[in-house]
Image 1 (tube, rainbow, N blue to C red):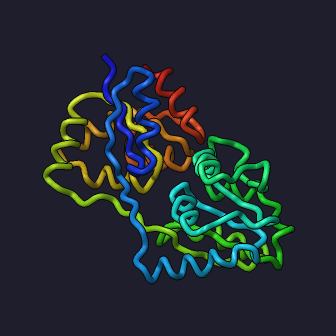
Image 2: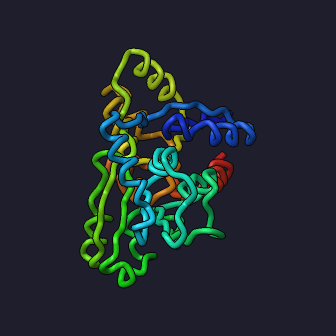
Length: 254
């Protein structure tokens, strides 16, 4: 009998995937390994101030679906002539949920769904066209500097703004018991963040570390695959971006 499918993405985005997993006849287990929370009022004010000036940018880059959801709580109609950049199909789906699609806005995205990250997004952008123009990067607090730095290196005037906070959940007896139960047998783990995977390893008790590394991981990005390998995991399936690919990998591994 197949084990559970452990969905580790933030709770706000886990439930639609859990329903799709259940439709395949598998048992989903929600175990959010990143907690997404709003900014304090000072941060919200700064975010609103920047977003009120969207029309002045040539390009707005959203680093995740969480960044899109948090920002669009303050955005009305998308301004004409402002391009959007995203790193994967999950972000495209988040934009569509807010009524923004390729038909009305030019959306830049990595061409290879297996490489949904800032490095491959940069290859999909016409960097020469951005020289001397304003670019906004919307992200979580403490996000990577690779994308802003590369855009600045290409001559763009880049601003960054935080839209949300994220954190690995705190250790607790309840979480420890839940992990112990999940690691007592083989399961499929859908891991959509390197940060979440590192958090999982830190949360697992020493006596469960070997069992953890024997679990089968399903990951959408090459960077997460590399992180998993470096952490000692040996059963890893790389799918590419988008829930459809995650679900297809799950079916092929059943």
